[in-house]
Length: 191
Image (cartoon, rainbow, N blue to C red; front, side, top):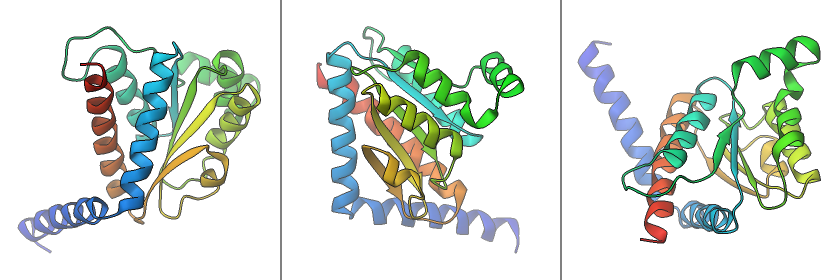
């Protein structure tokens, strides 16, 4: 396949997926519900915690900076923190186990006024699943950004949004669009 056809194919596939999700009432409703939970967390003085692996870790970090710094509007920072701190992850992973590193942070930080967001394109990331269990033990709400069929995390999360696609890159592309949509909603809620 030549470069032009590959470019066109990828752009068309991404565009078709976005168009399909625009027509999915359940998908839109799930995103509205998640927005309401995040707004309530902000209003109640809670913190939004985030985690994920690989590209999903980057999505968690991106969401955090949009909340703490700003998305589009000048406003006070929104309390958010990701669990992707390198020294903490490598310390815990070396001394104990990598799959419990996010759970340790959930045990340390999460409380009933907070929410923990986990990104997993497969829905089967063991360290995110264990973090959700630890967060729930502390009364913290959990939100999962998932792909494919949702994997095991769809049963662990209080709220979930599933991008029904098999390609990791398409799922991640939609996840970042959802992050931007949520930032827009949160920033304009009090405006």
